[in-house]
Image 1 (spheres, rainbow, N blue to C red):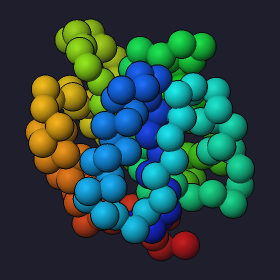
Image 2 (cartoon, one colour):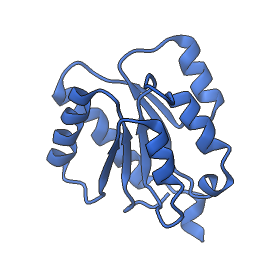
Image 3 (cartoon, helix red, strand yellow):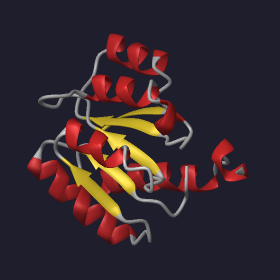
Length: 141
């Protein structure tokens, strides 16, 4: 995890992605925010060896590769494991089974998108601030 690295947002809903663009703009983090609507494109980006993301916010239900499949591909990739990228689900709705399955895959957080933009902004701010304070093994390279 590189605290000044990009924040990866994987969200296939255009309205939710536009809202997140506004929220990250309002919050003014210096991190580049990189958006993907497709898990495969996000995986291609992550596999570029010179990129060290700060964290990943992923929707669960997406076409082609869903959030669980993407997490599995990242989690089992040795090159990506060493980057210690926090992987968090940020989704509209869920089930108990989905939450249990996510944590079984070592997901570092599971969040339901609140109903208002102000509430979503509050959750995003808490997530980013938490991870900015957190120490990861990759910081000791």
